[in-house]
Amino acid sequence: MTDSPSAVAATDLACRRGERVLFSGLNLAVHPGEIVWLRGANGQGKTSLLRLLAGLARPAAGRIEHGLGRERVYVGHANALKDDLTVAESLMFLSRLHGFDTRAEAHEAALRRFGLWSRRLAPVRTLSQGQRRRVALSRLCTAPATALWLLDEPFDALDAEGVAALNLLLAEHAARGGSVLLTSHVALSLSSPEPIVLSLGEAAAA
Amino acid sequence: MTAPVFSAVLGRDLRLAARRRVDALLPLAFFAVAVSLFPLGVGPEPNTLRQIAPGVLWVCALLAAMLSVTQLFAADQADGSLEQMMLASGAGSASALSVAIAKAVSHWLLTGLPLLVVAPLFGVMFDLSGRSIAALCASLALGTPILSLLGSLGAALTLGVRNGGVLLILLIVPLCIPALIFGSGAVSAVESGASARGHFSLLGALFIATALLAPLATAAALRIATE
Image (cartoon, rainbow over the protein chains, first blue to last red):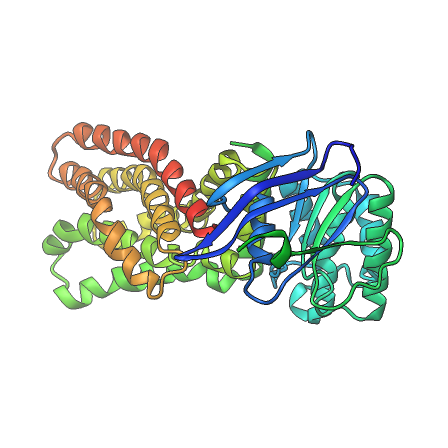
């Protein structure tokens, strides 16, 4: 591990879902330039951990420290898209909401990257699952450069081309000092940087 | 409260309503149909109609607001938009509050304001005098924002609950009763030639209190619902 200040660090974290303790005593740190692949069986609390780190939920115990001035981008299971808006409008809404880049060039680049530029005026209702996932992921391109990305199963529903586009984006993000924490049930096909595997079962003494 | 979040959410809601015009007109259609039933049921006696008009118009406006508010947050929660709104501009109480206010304002613009526009027509239908119709519009202008604010609180509280719509009406309608009493009371007072100043003062006080407190409660309920 590097000595540089971490993008996010959690100490002695515990998460409770109703009566059940999902995990406790979890320690983790994600540093700039790192891609961390969070692994664990279904129901072990991967999504809950991401939601804790995103700030959507409060931990039952423990502490979360965020790197100074680092934005967090959370892309959950749900794509947060409205059927009646077009692709371009959806991206614009999410970017405005989070205070991201709203310039037209940035949005064109983001949509081109995911092969959605020709579909920019299509209502989301007419898109396939994979295309919706691409729209949701395209807002990563409008986020600040060194943001912490929290991605819940980002490869879900993506085809080979989409996976390649996302891999490229992840590698570029790590190269410019951004950090990523992601879950995926399929093996990552990412070579540089080598993703750090964090197994939820081992990291937490549940 | 943060202005970009407020304008982003409000702008999106208005745009969505423009894409679904029929859905947006439903509360207004409900109001028109419900109000029109009364002369048919009660009989066309002008004096009776004039007497019940303030109450009928106010009750129908209240029901139209309650019926349309049930889905205010449900769709956004189902597709994950609500999560993103809660995380907007660095998760915190500010973004939740902005979302709560933006949603209440969009609900009022889409149901309260149209009701306000058509209410004079129905006043004429019930043979109200010009002064009574003016009082009706004034009371609805102060009262419908209260309904939208309380309704959005109810919608946030019943998020994720099965049969949330019925629960919402049971929870929130009692809170709307003061607005109903002073709103319809103001029109009745003017209709009978008395001063409606007291009614309007109380309605205004209710509006201010609701505007200050309801968004805070809505924001807290939203945070619990997305946790």
